[in-house]
Image (cartoon, rainbow, N blue to C red; front, side):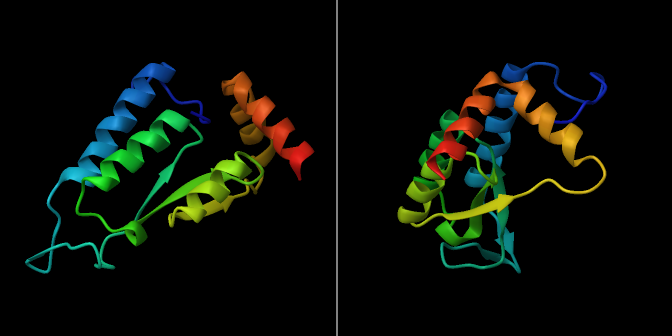
Length: 134
């Protein structure tokens, strides 16, 4: 995604990243978590994870996995860049999901933000639409 990494340690294409992301989501939602020698149930607060993506297909896949899993709705959250996909964030919250926003900061915030916008042309349109809607 947004970081420049050596191809020996990172997936090179968007399709490879998404395929691996789906595999990791499947692991998170489908394994039988054992916490303190008991099966994790939907009310358990022992497991927390985040699904950080702006990709609608990955979000839909996540919701589909959640519906058939033993993972509670409060055990995970969707994470988005602030100002991106605001309407989708509102929809997810209305459906009962947790949603968090993040803002890049620190010495590398600008190069990071530019890479995020350049990695997919759609991000530029999402940002522009969010600015107009705000």
